[in-house]
Length: 80
Image 1 (cartoon, rainbow, N blue to C red):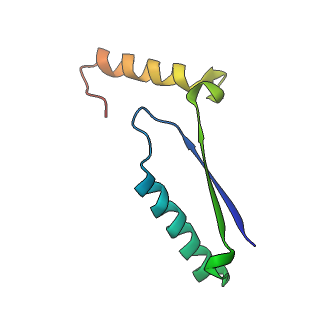
Image 2: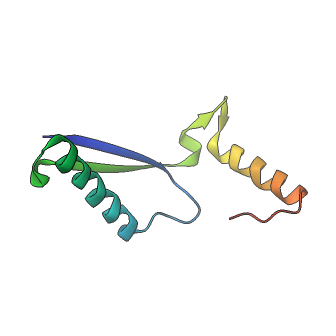
Image 3: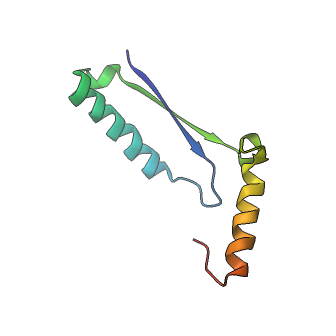
């Protein structure tokens, strides 16, 4: 039984249930096609990490995002 874990960073705009369903279906199809697994045997888990619970370069993701927004605003760019 293949078990696949997808870890997503939680964003201001959450990943919709529809997008999560697409991820699950797509990963399942990939394992069926690539490894010859039966779809009913594939388990896909989606974890969403709070930006305060992970970081990069010693800085939390929340702080990195704040800095990115501040830098973008200083340069007159719009954030998406």
